[in-house]
Length: 186
View 1 (spheres, one colour):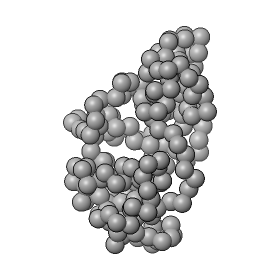
View 2 (cartoon, rainbow, N blue to C red):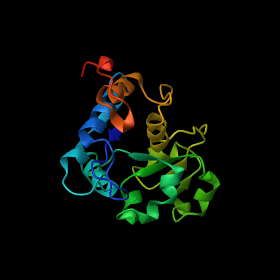
View 3 (cartoon, one colour):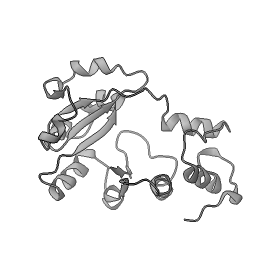
View 4 (cartoon, one colour):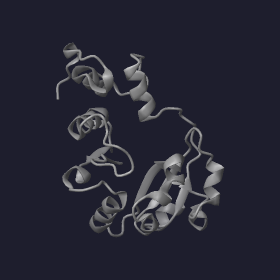
């Protein structure tokens, strides 16, 4: 599973934490997870971080490999506002996870309804073009909610990997008072 940092998200203001801090938090969060890798292509590209550009680059590297973009139902339902959104299914499959406030049943009424897959196995038989809605437990957590909890000095240890939380504390990110004692070997 590739994790891609959006260096310059075009759909919202620049993130509070610098791209270098966000990249380091990602590294720390996944460093001991087998099969998880950080993909730095958007950090190295100039201009906005458009998903379609990242998918084009991945497709060029892996022309026959089935690829899937994992995203929340809230993001999926807003994809028609993304840059070149019509090209995305020509580059990848989509795996859509339920999110609070976004009805998964609403997905069948979207522009991708003809691409909906009843089984995840359908994504293995083709390299692109299918949408699978994952029937997973609804986890009510979001990055913005975590940042708000940090600003309010609430406990986020259950929501953030330990090494990333120590990094946030060490660097005083998101309104957290800096605690150099929480330094983590980087």
